[in-house]
Length: 272
Image (cartoon, rainbow, N blue to C red; front, side, top):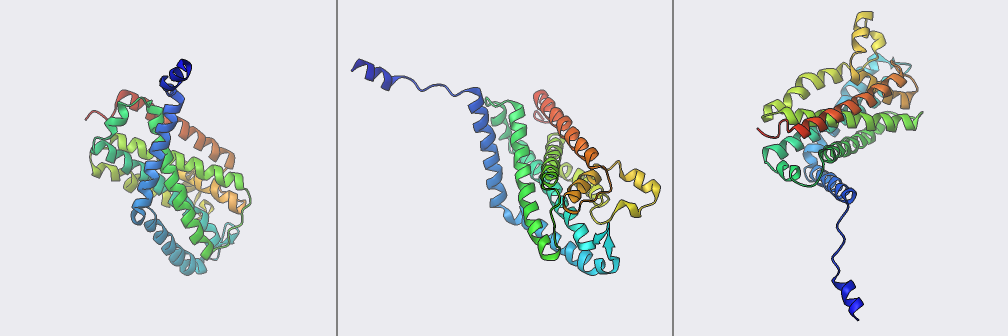
C-alpha cells in the first residue's frame, strides 16, 4: 500500500530542454498561423487580387502582343514569377509586422525572459513567415491555373526553391523588424529595396532581352536567381545557373540566420 502511495505522490518529471524548445517553437508557429487566418482579408486576399490583375493585364492583354517568352507562352512564363513574388512579399511582410508588433506592444519581453533560447524564437517567427508565404503562394498557384497551364518538370526543385526563398525573406523581415524603431521604418525596405528588386528580378521578362551591361547588373539581384530556379522547376529552362541559385539561397539563409541570432543575443533593437 505504501508503495502505491509513493507512486501516486511522486512529483511529475521536469520537462527536458528539447521538449521546452519544441513547445515554444510550436506555440509561436500556431500563434502566427492563427493570426494569418484571423486577418485573412489583409494577409491572403490582397495577393490574390494583385495576381489576378497581373494575369489579366500583363498576361491576357499585353501578353497577346508579346507572344512567346523563353520559348513558352507569355502567360505560362510569368505564372511562376507571380507565385514567387507572392511568396517573397508575404514571407517578408508577415515576420516584419509580427515581430515589430511584438516589440511595440512589449510582449516580446515575455519570450526573452522565458527558457527559450534566442535561436528558437528566430526559428518560430521564420516558420510563421514560411507558413504565410506558402499559403499565399498556394492561393496564387490556384489562380494561375485559371489562366495558364503549369507543367511540373522538377518537383524537388520547385519545393526547394520556394522553401528556401520563403526562409530567406522571412529572415529579412526579422532583421528589418529588429532595427525598425517605428512603423515608417518597417515599410522602408519593402518599398525602396524589395519592390524594385522583385520587378527587375525576371518576374515579367527574360533577362536575355536586356543589353549586355544590364544583364551583368541583373545577375547581382538575388531575386533573379530565386525566380529562375523556381521557374526552371516548371518550364525546364532558366536564365541563370540553378546550382548557383541554390548555393546563393543556402548561403543567404545560413548567414542571415546567424546574424539574427547574434543580434538577438546582444539585445539589438530590444532595449530601446
